[in-house]
Image 1 (tube, rainbow, N blue to C red):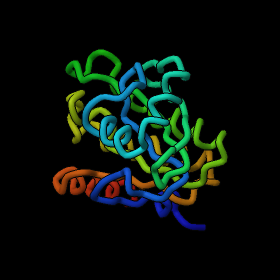
Image 2 (cartoon, rainbow, N blue to C red):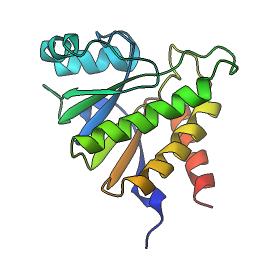
Image 3 (cartoon, rainbow, N blue to C red):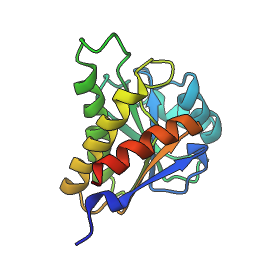
Image 4 (cartoon, one colour):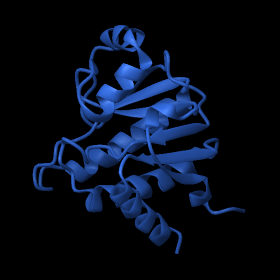
Length: 175
């Protein structure tokens, strides 16, 4: 039997270009678009995504909701508001892990077998990537064990330094 982490891939580039069942949007709680990954996904998906998100009623930090992919090559967008970094003493780690868990859960309910994540909360929300990456990888490995139907889990990193951080923690998880 192959190790669960064999389903995990790293990709450096634009998450909006990935042809997977679901891409994850590091959204804000309104789900109505914003900056960074959120803005890029909304721009690439077109106005239909915003119209659909208006019907979802927002989303709490640590939870996730799913929509169609609209003009994206992905079939679905899973929206999850990550925690804003406040120094690590406000439950940020639990909330971040919950984001990844809930994304897997709602994607599994929709029949997805492939999902691509950005590095949730490490942009404007200020979560240190050195602390966020191991949470993302550890939680994804746990969810792969629970949801073996996922054949591909992609961490899509925008920058080369972020890619290197995820690569290091993924290698450590495989040892």
